[in-house]
Image (cartoon, rainbow, N blue to C red; front, side, top):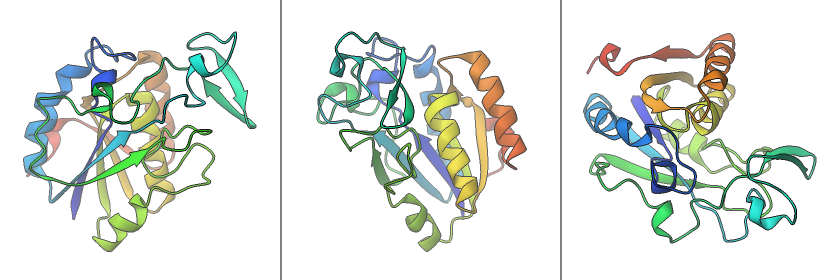
Length: 203
C-alpha cells in the first residue's frame, strides 16, 4: 500500500497568506499529478484555535519568529495562521481532493503546537494517523506539502519512529528556510528515511 501524505497545503502557507512559504503554490500541480501514482492519499491540516500558544500575538512583548520556552519545549512564535474555520486554514483552491481518503487535523490543542501529523510537539496526544495507516496496511509512506523543514520533516521523522518507511518528495515541498531543510534532509537520512523526486516515483 503505497501512501502519499500531503502536509498542510493551506492558504496561510501560500504566497499572500499570513505565514507564506516561498513558492508554496508551485507544488500544487505537482501534488495533483502525484496522487495518481498512489494507492492511498491522506492530507493533514493545521487547525489552530484562536489565541493558540504558538502565536506571537498570544504573548505580550514577544515578536514573530522569536523562540520561547513553552511548558519546557522550545516554541517559535508564529504569526497567527490556520485558525479553525477561516479562509487561511482552507486547502489551496487548486488542490484536487477526489482521491483524498482522510484528513487528519493537528495543532488543535490551545497550549501546544503540532508540527507532525502524528503527534503534538511533546508527543502527549496522537492524531490517530498511525493507527489508521496500520489498519490500512500502509507501510511505504511518501511526504509532500508545507513547510519542508518543519511539518513535512517532523511528520516523516515520526513515521520512522512508528515503524513506517518514510520518503520526502523534494520537488513537491518547499521550505521556509532552505538551509534548515538541508540539515533536515541529512537528519532524515540518518534515521533511515529517503529523499526522492516526483519523476522518480513509479505508478
